[in-house]
Image (cartoon, rainbow, N blue to C red):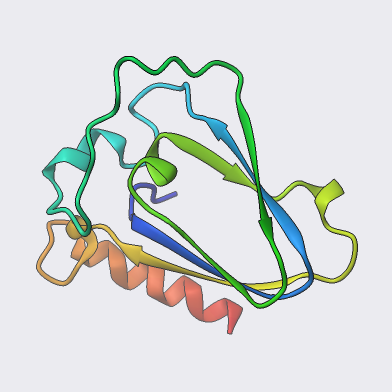
Length: 127
């Protein structure tokens, strides 16, 4: 399985059905996904340094996602928090479109660009 190819921004359009995005503070190793390489990527948006004075424990943040809404995760919300849509937060049919981008190593000039072909071929199974 190829991991680490999903870029800095995750864009979700919640087309049909209200829901909630649940955010929990990431506390795992920095080897998850593409975290070890993050500092080598050119920033897509301005990155803020984490505030060392803020202590976050078992915090759960619940963000409403009404139908026809747009949610963009990047920076700290993308890499310092984990996101999920819990089954109990889906009352009726839910349709969303999630846009993801490749990280620099998987772009056409990147060192892993050959693997991008495999990813794109697999994606054709879903359309």
